[in-house]
Structure formats: structure tokens, C-alpha cells
Length: 210
Image: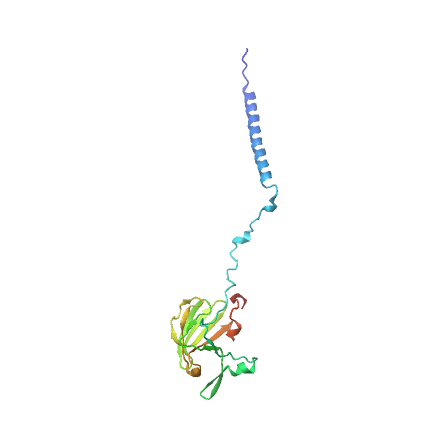
């Protein structure tokens, strides 16, 4: 048998053809797999880029205002004075002190001696003071421009600047000179966006809706 030696150009040509066939086969296989995998993309959920945006709201809209006490024996002793309210409630919202009638700017709760007074929401204690007529007072500032004021306290267990959580005890009920006839109580005032409002109309409301 006669041995024949292939010329170099022919060898290079053969190798080039083989390489091209191999590369082509790889692309064909990958393309086939991609078509099979994503043939129907209707079952896939695509993530929107807004999921990582920084301006997404983080306010918990389930936070509601609670009463400034937890004892079931505590009831309303003096109503909030409402100019448009019923005559009976208006009568029960008048304080009488030294021959002077004063309209109640909050709600006075009592019925039990030295009951715990609690914060209606998370917040920060912005003021603590003692008034000759109103007794010991705690003021707390909350989110959404809400301020709660607790008067007639007999004992205070927080200090100015304290961070308070909802339901935390801030003191005990007490007696004030302007309403001695009520006995042990807490006079509670609620200020929403600069307006003094009737607390009884705001309990259990979502803070984000105020």
C-alpha cells in the first residue's frame, strides 16, 4: 500500500471544519434547551424593580389608639365638653371650681383608687410638670402629629425624654384640686394635628387614618 501524506492546507481545512461543526452543535443544543425551558413563560412571575425602591411606605397602618387605662372597673366620670353634644353630656362635662364653671377639655376616668395609667401609643415623653389645680401631668408626643396629656396623676413612673411603648404604665391615678369630687382619676386630653378632640371618638382608630 502506498502511503500518502496530506498537505498542510488540507489538514488545516479539515480541522477548521471539525471545530466549526463542534461549535455549531453546542449552540444547537443550548438553543434547544432554552426553547424547552422557556417555551411557555406564562407560569413565571417577573420581579418588578420597584421592589427595591427606597420610597416604599413603612408605616404600620394597623396601629390603633387604646384607652389610657386597662382596669375594667374604670369608667367615665366627666365627659368631654362638646358644643354640639347632647345637653345631658354637656352637663356632665362642666367642672365647678371656686364659684366658676369650667368646660372640660378632656375626659376624666375614675372609679378605682390608684389604678395604672398607660400610654395610648408609642411615643416620647416631652413634658412632666405639677400644677396646683391639675395635679401631676405627663405629656407624650406620638407619630402623625398626635399628643396625649395625662393629668391628675398621683404618681409618675417616667421622665422627660423617655421612649414609651403603647400600653406602658406611666403612673397612677390621683386627685386634683379642680376636681376633688371625682376622687382618684386621670384627666385625659388628646390633641390631633393641633386640635383638642374628644378621646372617646378616637379609640380603636388607625393612626395612619387620622
